[in-house]
Length: 193
Image 1 (cartoon, rainbow, N blue to C red):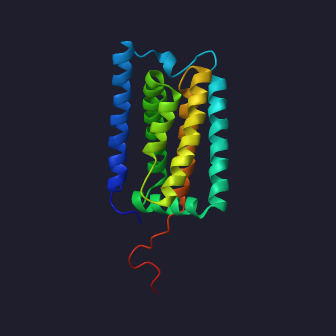
Image 2 (cartoon, one colour):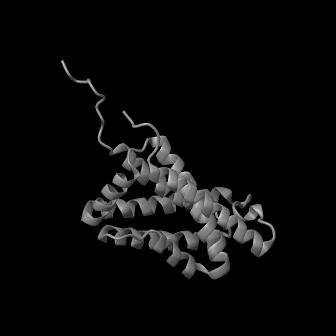
Image 3 (cartoon, rainbow, N blue to C red):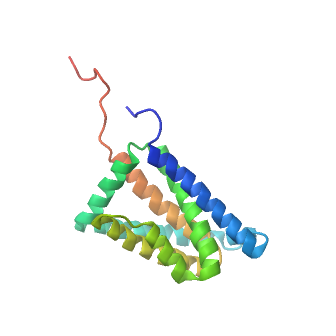
């Protein structure tokens, strides 16, 4: 049985990502005057962008699974994130994956990469994923590798679609895994004879 409503961190994450997306829109708007749909989508190559995003997301998930199997810090990080997020339904995990992947790509690969270049976009993204424990250092390294991949896709393809797809894929699978791994809560009175 899930407690009433999402955790405070989940609510904060939604506010944070909405503000981040708004910041990206404003930044790009001030820089360019208008935001072209071409930033998000290439109608002539959308299928390639989609495939590249899925492939990149799959490779990053494979890398994380390898780390999870072989690095105690990866398992510790997942436990810590699960604890901080609280109980998370699969639909909440997917919603958080969509908003975080879109907002972070719009801000970091849309606005920051456009204004300051891929090095700044990658470093700032990695720093956003840092924290006080050793496990968070591993997250920062993984986020830096992911950011390099997302920047490369954006620069190569000239739009955000492949990076957004890759990012959402990574977040959806990892957050979905965390939601599925939560211990089952027995309702009061259940199981008593």
